[in-house]
Image (tube, rainbow, N blue to C red):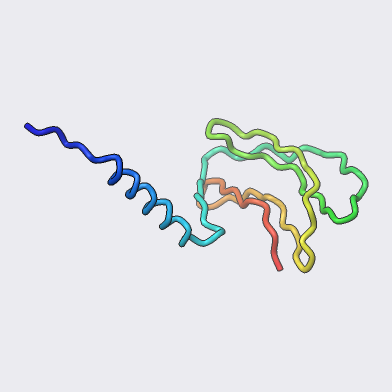
Amino acid sequence: MKPNTMSAGKLFAGILFSLGSLTALPSHAGINLDIDVAPPAPREEVVPPPREGYVWAPGYYNWNGHQHVWVQGHFIRNKPGRHYVADTWEQRDGHYHHNPGHWER
């Protein structure tokens, strides 16, 4: 039997073609993951005084593949003409779905 081999050039061309096709994906493409474990109640945070040019993104629980982990709130640079929508969890058909924080017009 002849071993199945691929030249380095063909392999490199295939990788480049695959990477090039990723640029056609919309910028909001992502993976949706629903889990069976409800997040704990949000922690209380002490929000620091406002900072010019920034908005406060409140803390939230993120799923790390094994458990919920707390992500501290933080300032993010303001985007004029948009408002920030914080991370949330919602229950869907007995599962929990994370909606990442994002900007809206």
